[in-house]
Image 1 (tube, rainbow, N blue to C red):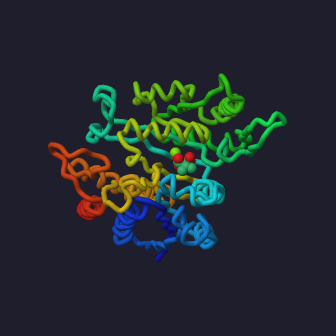
Image 2: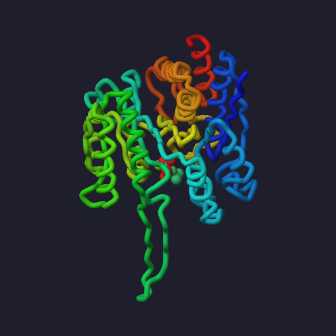
Image 3: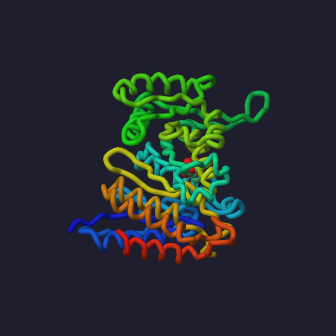
Length: 367
Ligand code: IPM
Ligand code: MG
């Protein structure tokens, strides 16, 4: 029997609580298929710095190198606690970005998805949400400003300055654009190219390469949108978008806005894919230390990230669909958690763990 090794990095804050629910789901999938999962947990994030002196300890590095896939919870602590950690070991700089670089996960898929039955979660008016929201944001994840050279100093006049480079080479741009085109081919054959070529040279090169790559995808219609205009359009008319492709920082910002139009970042799972099958999966949101341990965080983003792993790392498209379906059915049956919903007519508030149990119950009964 095939055994897949999955590195489990629960992370900080609400990470361990929502990870526990994702693991329940993986156990169901494992039970009814002819493979097994070897789930190996490892320290990662701010907690790892306090317990192991490193936010991305060597044992975790070795594990992610050998694992068939990695699932990661959110990381980070509140502002005061973070300040106890040396700047370069703070988990975003010391763990998360190095993880992305290590696995070279250049393609970050962030679905902004709300079926019509869940449209009430969105803060947008019903006539704007229409039949629901179904966008796939594709963010370049290992280049640009976040990984460019950085310098801070004082100039000859005694003024403090900072310099950060937005760096891409043509292969990095071509790779993420190709990913965008491929995804567009599998959906509506429309690719929204998000850029800022009226100001940034990086976008000029990006668009030049897009013209070249587009030749291999004559069936895909490309629509160009400036990133600032895209932010407005996402609020006014999200249904005009399908696959959106963009560089790292644009994707960081617009995908959070994606969570905003859904009603919560808690509804945002993601897949981070590299070459040679390397991949890790994570919710797009932070670790919400203010609600840690209260069992009120919805595990949707974590379980959804696991569903993406089933699809992209293990080719289990149907099982992934079953997991999505199970989660949506739990909401549709009127259950929610208090991070997502206010008490009110027709909503029964349940805990993080009860939500996971209901997903599992539905999965066993229906898929
Ligand atoms: C995200 C997060 C990260 C990012 C942070 C935690 C470094 O905001 O995954 O969107 O900026 O990429
Ligand atoms: Mg972000």
